Length: 160
Image (tube, rainbow, N blue to C red; front, side):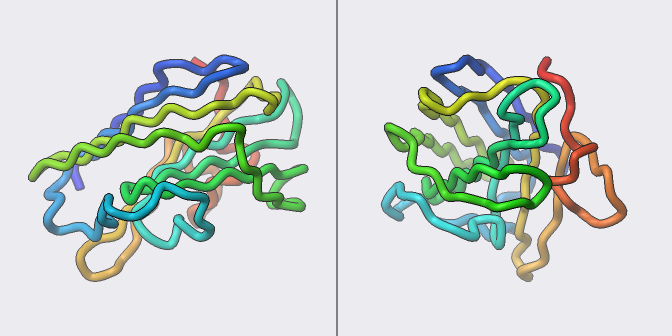
């Protein structure tokens, strides 16, 4: 893998819009097929998956975890604090995930309806990438612990 770019295009009280672009030899990675039905699916992080964590309010310990798969499956969870009391959430409308796959690039364009889900403050952007042998690598703006832990409170950074 060469690089992972994440562009936060919009984060308002109503909408999340972002683009993940993975620069890699895509044929050497395990990328889920996009033929699956777009639906809430647990444990997407066990394979290639793109993630976002966002605090519910500035300075709060409560946060959301959003997972997006190239299969167009997704997951949304609310946590009261660090790994504390995860609850699966079904948004008013499921996220829209557009996937563009090329030999050296995988791009996911995501638009999610966040209405009714209070959020603000710090965020963490991350990805789990599975290679052709099933080995996982963990990518993040900041790794705050010795082992990959995207939930770690120090992984969250201020909004750009």
